[in-house]
Image 1 (tube, helix red, strand yellow):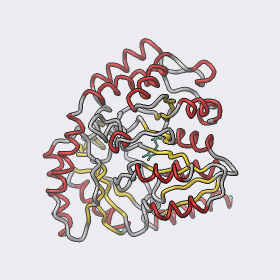
Image 2 (image 1 turned 60 degrees about the horizontal axis):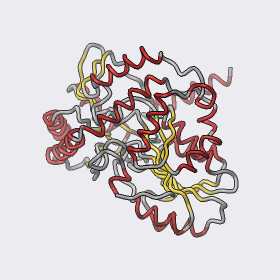
Image 3 (image 1 turned 45 degrees about the vertical axis):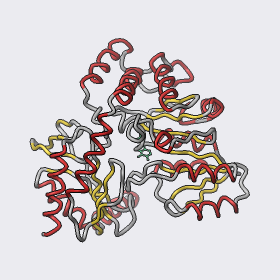
Length: 386
Ligand SMILES: *Cc1c(COP(=O)(O)O)cnc(C)c1O
């Protein structure tokens, strides 16, 4: 069995490089206190930025919705799986993001595959930030469009490539908040370039939706921009605390995706009960601004508490607060030492981040207390000295 033995050889190489990934089995998890093997950890791992994933009102909404709609949609949206709960959620998402229309997906990964493969093909070109999420890169490959990547946030390099392009359609694709760095894409400048070169701008706001802007409407509210050229995409499994994703934009865009986006057409619709919970979650995002204010206070506490020499907290104004450690083994050792002290922060290694920039990815949640973050900072200060 050469095939299978080649797989085990590769697995051994992954382990030897310090890159083997393991899943932890959690017995009980809210966003910030998790129990594994009977031991409780203070967690800084979750993307549940607003602390909504365990919110009692949402748990109750799910119970009600399951009683009303059952547990499965039973078909794809274009057959008979599109129910009142989905429809209401799409309408609410469009209104919340200030866009004419919205279309719901089961995951952000699928939404990105759907959007990119529907909008561009062989005669077209995609211009992508080097640090974009893997789903956007996979989508680009699947689309068969020319795939041109530009250095992270380098607008001059992007403009050069746009100017040189002979493509029929041009699509600029970027994370709005970069998932491993926590920095924010310069949307107004990107939009100007898209106007100059007749491109569309796909913004993946997985980490900005619910978090950025005083109303939590995401990166467009943060910058105060809107444009028909923008294809706005966000996920609902992070700040919204549930599951799913959506795209919002012009009515033409959404009509077109409905006809052409294969990962939309050929898949079962999200369970309607989840759609109903998401509508409730959206009301909490809208109504509870204190959750965003708490996130700001937590980030400030972290910055003020850390006193690092060799390691480096990256500049970030979002709940993603990475600390660069450097090597793969070093970051694993720090992550393990934190765990021994009851604190769980994930170690992020290549290929997710560039070689030599392995890091702790601290993610903050409105469910954290200021004292939780102060404890993390003090523990990191102490570990750096060892
Ligand atoms: C998490 C994430 C996705 C994928 O969303 P899922 O709903 O988890 O599939 C896409 N893009 C970015 C930037 C993400 O962080």
